[in-house]
Image (cartoon, rainbow, N blue to C red; front, top):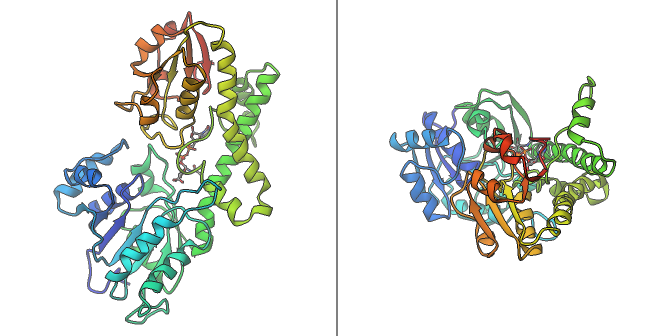
Length: 419
Ligand code: SAJ
């Protein structure tokens, strides 16, 4: 089956050029597709069209630069016509922890007027069960002349193919991870598989759209629950004066035990968000998933309380906080517990100097830059000047630090790097 009749090089539009959309667009383009990337951020469009990238991700810039130079990838704010649309826009949640599908709705409304029939729409955004159907309803509401009925001249095909790549390893995992492909109508899943086979060497796991949506949420909820176990253990161990890192290492020698690592909390735009979509979809049946979220969300305050106890004993205390990103070796500050803790420290200790270190950024995010008592510093200088060192992210720079630097310092190690 052809991706599109007569088309050896399918035209693909990728909507949303973020952490998932841009790598997907670039890897598709370098595998032979003609790709147009669509985004609302003109600055990012300009950066991409210059063959550069707006965020740090290993090996992404080489693939983008190559695809742009070959004329296979261009970025624009205008929705084009394409044989295949990949929707990779954000699905945030609202204050009430309910999913916000407005970006998906807008994408559907912008695509609808351009459709002729026989196009494939793939939803990649992490979505609550029923969202692929919602996208189809949005398109058909704007274009009642089109249909989901397979094999007509006016059929539009819909599939869900959730991304599962790990930030920091995106360019590897895009090619090697297995892919779940969920069909909403006709042979949409088969068409999607044919497209992803251009670059993905993993196994293709075919199912319906609703199960595919839930499978993505399940994977992240599984990880969240397991991290919550580690975080809860760390708070119990602290109250019992036990070193949690040693404790976990010992327990993990059991052949069927594999406890994850505690930290200052869970961040990022996936694991801290997606489990709430399951809770919203089935509130009465998701007590474990809800509790795990609450345990992980409570961890930054636990770290903060312990630190404040010591910090308040020192006049004009200087605190070096190591790391602002949500996980090691990335520049992504979204939903970062480290960023949250540094902001709260600044509020709680107006007379303190907070020496924030984050080797992957060049300037502080606006909410921290606005505070008089927070400055962005270089690692060795910040530690040298500090009374207290708070390690929040296990970036390589901190893991390989000379231990002599910490000799006279009060050290809080939330990641077990030096413990
Ligand atoms: N974390 C811990 N302890 C651990 C592991 C992680 O505290 O033992 C923390 C991290 O520091 C970070 C957060 O959890 O704050 C999430 O980090 P992560 O590395 O576990 O995951 P993400 O958010 O970068 O990516 C996840 C991945 N999902 C799973 O591993 C099941 C990835 O495969 C998904 O594609 C991604 O979410 C996504 O986009 O949904």
